[in-house]
Image (tube, rainbow, N blue to C red; front, side, top):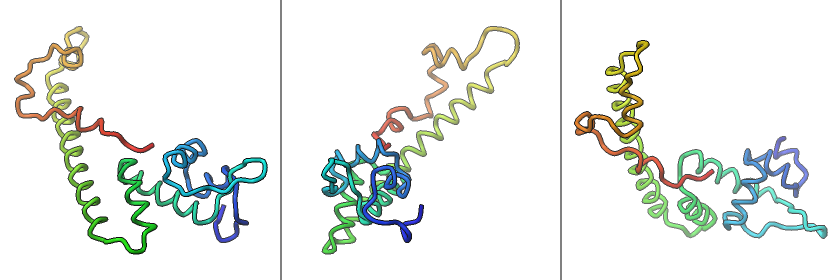
Length: 160
C-alpha cells in the first residue's frame, strides 16, 4: 500500500499496513495519547488521516531505535511543536545513547560470562555442567568478580 495512491482517511487495518504497526499496537499507542484525536465514523470506526499514519511511522522508527514510550511521547510532542528547541531533542537522544551504552556493556558482560561457562563445560556425556550450575545459582561467584550485573540493565521498559 502506497501513501501517494491512498484515499484518505483510512481504516485501522490500512493504517496498520501503511505504518508497519499492528492494529493492536496502534490502538495501544492511541490509548496512551501518542496520537492526537482520531476521527470516527458514525458507526464509531476509527478513521486515520495521512498525518496520523506519518506519526505512527515516527513512533515505529523511535521504537525501533529503542526509545521508551515516555521518550517517544516527548519526541512526538517535540516533533509536532514547530517552536521546539533542538537542544531538548538532542538531550533526549544523548541520554538514550548513554542508556544504549549501558545495555551494550551488559550484553557484553553476559557474553563474556557465557563464554567462560562454555569453556568450563566439558561437553561430554557426564551430567556435570557449569552452565546449568550457574543458571541454578550454584556457580562459583569468583568467576564474575570482573563482570557487571547485566540483568537489571537489560530489563528496562521498552516499547512494543
